[in-house]
Image (cartoon, rainbow, N blue to C red):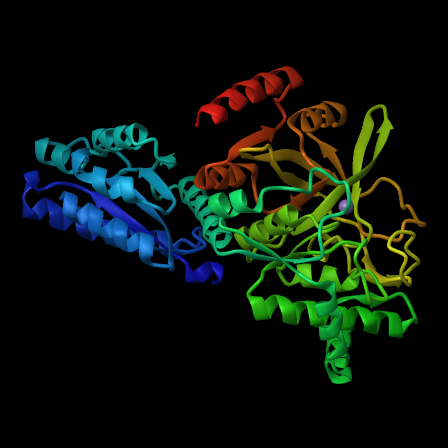
Length: 491
Ligand code: MN
């Protein structure tokens, strides 16, 4: 499903105490608020007013419907009047979708002349939302609380941002990952418990033989390759005359896409140690698949493949870019310290600062023919890098704030796409924190998805979240990880 196909249900709390006129006003205002929020352009998905809860049965019915409707990616609740929360217990206890409590108020200001006790009874979100909040806390339900006036742009944008995280949760719960071969031999951090991941995150991670891919490649026609070559020409500059090598990448791309689509997979991994029957490691092929929204992880890293697909789904329609990435090497000049990210071949061109070039160069790893790949520099801007690791018994999501720069060196002999960045709080402290938390060398780098959205997503999926930001110190992080370790063992 595309971002705009999802909807969020606006469920408003009240009670019968104030009479039918008040309830009519609540319903018409809730519908008006949903319409205006939808028209603002700040919400990526539709907000649908589904009704006012006045009884236990109404709350339970609405939540049941939300749970079973695949279009519904979450609920947004608000208490216009006081709404006694015991009537919400059965419903919210059964809730399986992300929940945002929008603590807002229909009117912005207290009207000096108009205010009387009727006004007070109609507009009492200030204590209605506290009753509602108590129940959320008492149920230990994961929820996002957004407080503020609903017409404020900042409030609308926070709601829109949370919606994107919730779409990431819906996407995650139906995600299928295709592994071509196994993980790179002896590597630890790319391993993980696929059963636990499916229970927690919904991912179906399974393996297909490389032989099946080679067979599918053999069935690709010249006409199909011609058509994809034309797409490459429209999107990229050809900095090679070796068209046969580029055509081979097109063959690989078409075959991989055919297998992914046939199985409904939105992410894949492969491994240079298992290219049996293939002449090139897929480079351009993988990069162009990522540009179309597929997630990818190198060396069999199916976790980063899935996370790449999820962050791409969360940022659908945004233009900053999201890519599979690897911290490769550092520039440690005092006062000018940077991390250089790249991969053997496979960085997504969505992060490119300029039109990518197709080049062909030998590859020392994998023992195959020189592969075609896209070469470019990443653009400047604030971004995050994200890594999901399996701690044994639980999953930890690590997110670091970074600032990407135009690479400070031209690096003319580096034949791969590259991104250069400053890690927060600074390079070496950031590295100390990342290593202390156990973050992988593989990450998802995104200019679009924010750390706040990853925090929301982790809360929705009920996994540990670690954020390395401007204010993080190794001491504070170590302390947090220690407490977190205890908490997650008890959970
Ligand atoms: Mn790698």
